[in-house]
Image 1 (cartoon, rainbow, N blue to C red):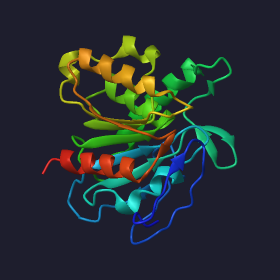
Image 2 (image 1 turned 90 degrees about the vertical axis):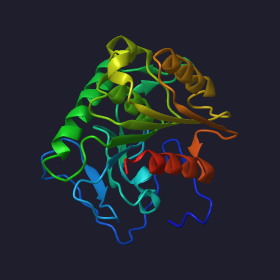
Image 3 (image 1 turned 180 degrees about the vertical axis):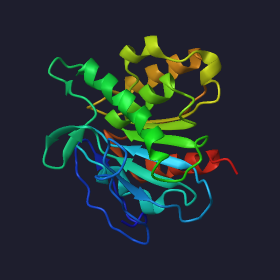
Image 4 (image 1 turned 90 degrees about the horizontal axis):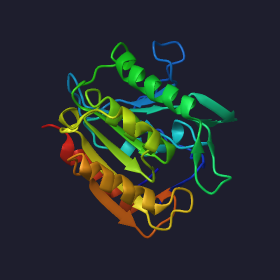
Length: 246
C-alpha cells in the first residue's frame, strides 16, 4: 500500500496487505500463544527496537500490518492476532457489549488478554531478537485499550504506547503500577472528535487521568470518526521515530 495515496482503517474492517521486501512469519508452530506477522527491520542491528501492533474488535493481524512497509526502519514489527474468534478472519481481545450505549466489557476476558500479551512479549524473546528495553505497543480501538492495560500494569515490559481511538478501562486502574514505576513510560494518544464508536471524551478523560500520575502523553485530536487516516499515521510514525533510543 502506498502512503502517497489517502488510506484509512475503520472499526472492524479487514484490509488487504501488499508484501514488499520484508519477511512475514506466523507462529503456528512456535513458542508464542498468539499468532502473528512480522516485518524484519530494514536497518539491521543486533537487537532492534520492537513494535507490537494490536488490532481492534472484528479485525485481525493483517489490519495494522498494512502500515508495516512505512513504519520506522529500525523496528522489528510484530502484528498480533487477538485470542477470541468472532468469525472468518474476525478476532478480538475481549467481548464488548454496546447495547446500553456505553461499552460493557467481559472483564475476565480482558484480564486474560492482558496477561497473555505480557507473556507474549516474553515468549517472543525465544523466537526473534529485539531490545527488551525498547518495546512499543501501537493499538487501534480495542488494541489501544490493551496497550493501556499492559503498559500501565507492567511498565517494565514496555517503553511506550501509541493509543489510537481507544480508551483507558476503569477496571484496570486499581491494578496500575505506582508512579515511580511509570515515570519513564512514553505515551501517544490520538482520537477523532467525531468518533461514534468510542467517544472522543474517552481520550480526554484518559489524558487528564494520566496527568494525575505525572505522565505527560503526546495528545493529537482530529476532525475524524473511528478511523486512522494519513495525518494520524504520519503523527504516530513521527512519534515512534523520535522516541527510538539512538
